[in-house]
Length: 436
View 1: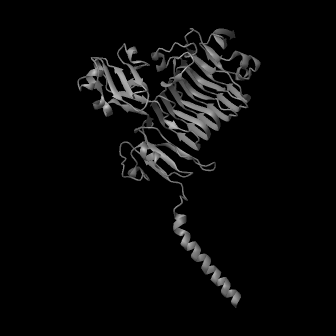
View 2 (view 1 turned 90 degrees about the vertical axis):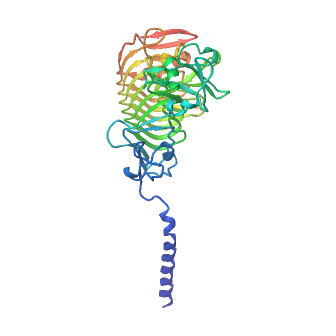
């Protein structure tokens, strides 16, 4: 009898414990949630759990307490401003950022419209205007990509209309206004219906993030990278449109010349299981897709770029290199992509005249990594421009390294190349060596 009483008491005790825990269990997100975001119908007061209760902006998205398996959907036709700061998922349940509704892809852009800051411009002389800015401006776009400002690196270099200079010391942007820009600032009739000031920070920040999916989203108007990744794992970028990326200041080189940068998708240092599939990538200052890095012991593995349409990129369609001791690259593929008009992007308007600045289908700046299973196959390359007046399928900068280990060269097979005079270009001490 005592035994039965003890068992009964134990059952009551366990039941009481479980009952008391119920509120705590409810705090966890046991079922994946879907959040909706609309710049047209959203509100700062909404929770975002239905299209009729949509969030309004990127800031709200960045503040969401997302859990593995959750989804964030941006309404098609909407435009959002700012940097997206994704939340990592898990290996079993990724977090997805995608779209809903009908019409054009939703656009996430990291640029500021002139109409949001027009009252902050100060006239400094008859043509020069200044405005405070906490970030470098790497590109100024007029009339939805019809005209571009030209970035300079000293105030005295502002000699022509639409030249501009960002002074990092004072945090002031100076611009040489033409008649139409000045009219716009003064509220008069102007041919400029839009002016976008692109900020030098990644539009989608993937540093140390993992287990994410991005699908059916447009990434546009930023002066760093579209997707900037470092030590990033298990990320899929699918059917996205990435355009007008790059142009920001990076550093001064050994010759004290300014170096600008900006790629559509960059994996820097280590990373694994990165996929860029079925995307449209165009008007990129430097390179469409790249895996590169300087990290000692860096490892890049299982990286796939396939079935993308790539055109109008300044430097190259694909850039790959990994430097540093004990680095490795394995199972990397650039396959079934259609590439056109490399060297013809908006970056050509910036006066880029460095030897290797424009126009190569694939570029490599020397590679210290041990490479295994690299595939550059079944791509179509059409039309390339560079400062030498001819094209190449592959540019290898560090001739000593590349001639000792021509793995990268041997990986280029079964590609259709049009408009390229030479298949491979090696460089050494400013001289060029060709291998047809």
